[in-house]
Image (cartoon, rainbow, N blue to C red; front, top):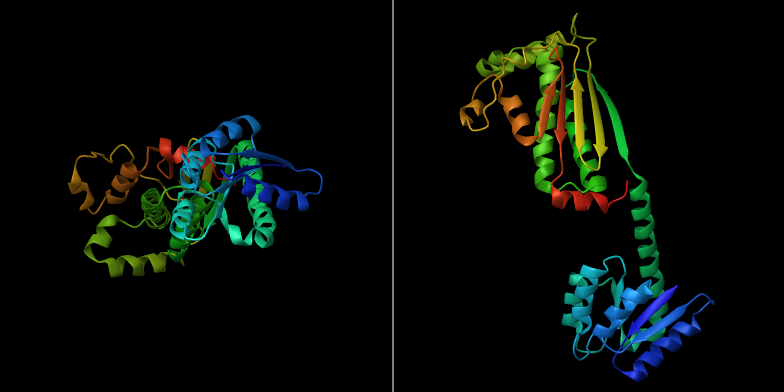
Length: 308
């Protein structure tokens, strides 16, 4: 384990070094820097596991060092050592990326435990990143009966997964959720139950009543919706297939510049799907849709930083 101590005062450097050596089990290397500028040079050459830095220093102070570390060495944690009266600056440093802080008056009591906690978190993050480097693909399969309440449950599950494990931004999660919801509804109501959009436009209550009736009779009641979610670094793929007779895909016109498609009884869902997804394809029969979302550059960086 390598620790870099940054402090412009020789007495404080010696104090911190003594505390660290007292808790040393034999595998600790300590380096010292007298300024933020020197610290950055030593971080590049020594690659420490953690940086302990004073907050108030001439030239590049602790806050500026934290900002620079977050930009140049984001996976090396910084712990602040703060003096009395610097609480506001310390709070700002924490917002800027510092991992923790220890008041100089409590170094003897709290430095060792703070260091252990931060290093444990940093180790977990590094292991997670190594694991993510090995990750290639995750695939999930779902089979849904013709129960509309399942649509929201599946969509919510997918959104939670993409947010937690693939770091998809909130605004994109909403768009993906809308597209998935529309595709599942199309497969369930128009595919398996063969209900017409015009009936919903005229009388939604009658539409859902007929849906409930068809769920109980042949040939509709045993039909299911199959949904496969495949996540890769470069794309998220949704494949939804129903057991209906399909529909004429070529007869569905799509003009992204025509907002009147949003008010038509037929084709509204497909218009939203094509608008929100990067690529949309159907099989020849028209009972299977493949929707592909490709993360933008900023999203790709986030994908690479999160393990699964």
